[in-house]
Image 1: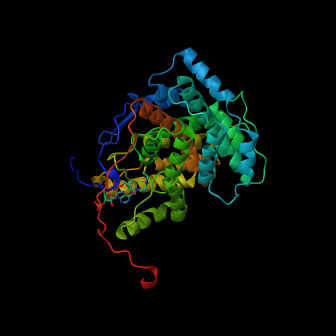
Image 2 (image 1 turned 30 degrees about the horizontal axis):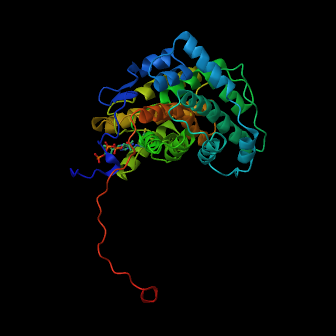
Image 3 (image 1 turned 90 degrees about the horizontal axis):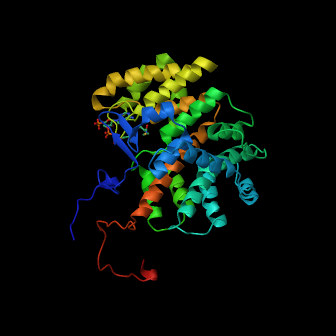
Length: 378
Ligand SMILES: CC(C)(COP(=O)(O)OP(=O)(O)OC[C@H]1O[C@@H](n2cnc3c(N)ncnc32)[C@H](O)[C@@H]1OP(=O)(O)O)[C@@H](O)C(=O)NCCC(=O)NCCS
């Protein structure tokens, strides 16, 4: 057997062949199924982009209408799931609530028919349709309110914002939210996608696949960074404090949240789009002093770290957009999950098409022939 060099975090080791998305970190290019992210953000919708990622091609008018309708009609969750969620502690993190609820779907839809295209489609539709309902339900229930039912007359993103805030959202806010979902739906072989593929490779059900990916996305090194950006901007507090804050953190060898990326060595193309969306929101609903702080921070960090390829990543401006929409900070990562579920499902489907169970090896560095010491002698 060929012995390979051990790479912590599997850095640089291909874990799959995939035609779902592509990143060029030097040029700042992100493509879904070959289409540039800028094109999709300007012209597509989240539901259309989800279809593209999962089925590999842009849908025809009829295919899109059928998919939209199926998702629309599957938004409701079973009352038993709702009642189960009512028992969750309100102090719990919404990502933990989402992971438990996604896994619970598997109890209700326990048929596992992975070779049947109708089963694949059904599972895709159910997960894309119900994850937002479960996120919004937990948000209302932890405040002591009953969840509101989805509204079939509203589009995907508008309906989520309606379920979250119990009022119909502004059209521009709903459109911008939908673009945010497009920007977060897929990003090659990141930790949660890898997790989804490993779970998928055991041929378990898609609810377990999504639940394991949600658990992986929840960590601060992955989906949680956008929450920390807002905390950092609040801590800085004013434009004048930006330079001393950055200098002090760099002196103490501390990371600046929302900057840098393992792959991108230029400004993340998603950050460029998100910054523009944030400006559109501020134009309509009034400015935000944290945006002024953020812009100054981008200038100072570029001056200090631009030569190392450290620029704003996707998390730097997304929090400002969600904050302006009145979304609580601890829902930022569940919203990331609402988007990413379509990416995970695309990888689930791709994994099943050419499955081999993941079974990497290890470099054993423990003892051999160790004695068993009787309990009374230890
Ligand atoms: C995303 C991240 C983990 C990538 O890390 P990485 O690939 O190990 O970064 P690199 O090793 O290529 O970094 C190169 C140099 O830039 C520095 N650097 C990277 N990100 C930095 C940041 N956010 N703030 C300050 N310095 C940073 C590193 O310390 C390193 O410095 P050195 O050469 O003096 O040792 C890292 O940039 C980070 O922790 N960013 C903040 C958290 C964040 O926003 N995460 C969301 C990612 S989408």
